[in-house]
Length: 143
Image (cartoon, rainbow, N blue to C red):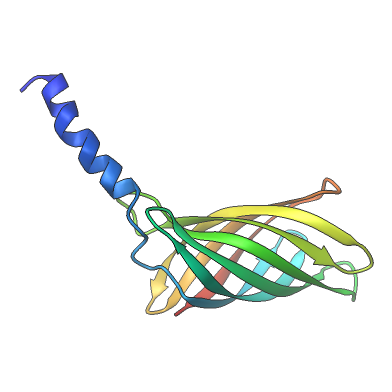
């Protein structure tokens, strides 16, 4: 079998795998994170499945920085359950706003994977409009 023939057979299969929904797609989720800038909790709900991509949802959260006692709240639109082929891991991308002493917009991206039952891990990186960068790790319950 030539390389060209092998490519013709594998490319369609890989394309289908890349665009299938993640097996651990969630309708509702809640979680807690430890970040480089603080800690927080969040919850969300999927509103609209996006065929061959994932799910569009909304998420809200409360966060506290390590350096202050002030709590900030966030609201976001998220594209979740972006399948990564041949892995149990999926990706997400989020845009939202933090509300505290000022409103700051942010973009966040990361990876999610299974732990046990409905529990999973979450790694993310966030960039705010004021130039602040943070990263974190957390646990998430998905239903």
